[in-house]
Amino acid sequence: MSNEKLADVRLVAFDVDGVLTDGRICISDEGVESKTFHTQDGYGMRRLLEADIVVAVISGRTSAAVAKRMSELGIAHVVQGCEDKVAALDQIIARLNISRAQCVYVGDDIPDLPLLKHVGFAVAVANAVPALHAQCDHSTSAAGGSGAVREVCELVLGARSQTSR
Ligand SMILES: [Mg+2]
Image (tube, rainbow, N blue to C red):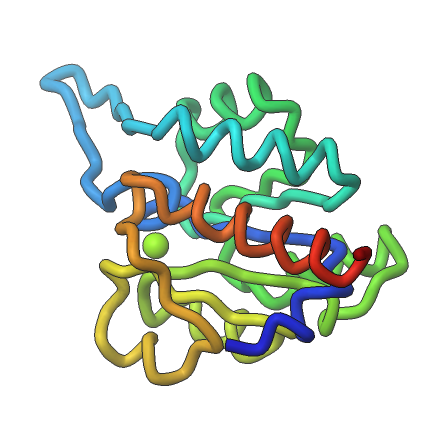
């Protein structure tokens, strides 16, 4: 695992369904959607922010629960209903004046592949479709919604503290 690639990370971006959640979408009889997030993932994202690493969430779907949870965590870069994830990330990094090589992206399915190939360090969660694992720099031990996000946060923070020693 190349921790060198992680030493200069400025932004960590996450897919939502299957990464921040276990991929299941609950829809009530009234059509109201709900999602389950892991508190340990939230704490990891907060730690990234405290370490001055930008956190972004880029989702193909749109959910009020995602907006609410990310606002709770103080995450400013939330892109939902996104049809072109590469373009969405490029917009964010242009605003921040950082390079795509300084970005980590975490995904679980084929729609994430173009963005995974675009960033400096690509991560597949344990529950990602098989095709993704082969194309990523790293695969998590934990599954989406069960600590995969926290695992990536610790990996990034660990690489940073190692190089600043
Ligand atoms: Mg997904």
